[in-house]
Each structure stands twice: as structure tokens, then as C-alpha cells.
Image (cartoon, rainbow, N blue to C red; front, top):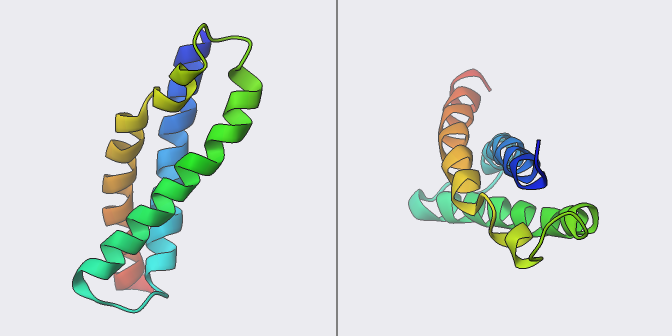
Length: 96
């Protein structure tokens, strides 16, 4: 696999982890309509930005342009995060 493809799949896996984590933390946040979603989105964004630094250290020499590390799979990350957040938030609300 090329480094870009590896980076893509790492971001997809991080989107799943961020969805589960933000759904679990959303249960302990004060429940307002929009603030829970904004707080959960902020958690997902923080996970994305924090993961950039280890990924940059790993893939800096393997990728032609270092800016590709930040921009690769950003849309897929959030498109993965959203359904996993909704599913796990619903499951946590029902069974917790």
C-alpha cells in the first residue's frame, strides 16, 4: 500500500474511534439540543488535529508534499465520524 492509502485508512479508523469517544462523552455533557452536537464535533476535531502530529512524524519522509498529510481524507474522517457518533450515541442512550 502506498503511504497515502495507509494515511487514508488510518483516518477512517480514527473517525470510528472519534465517533465512539464523542458519543460516550456526549452522555456526560449537559443535554441541550445544539450544544451536545457542537461539543461532540469539537471533540472529533481535536482528535483529528492531535493525530496530525504523530502522522506527520511517521509520513513526513514518505509523502511528496507535507501538506498532503493534513488534507488527506479529512472529508472521509468526518463522514465516518458522523454515522458512528449517531449510532453509538443512540445505543448509549438506550442501553446506558
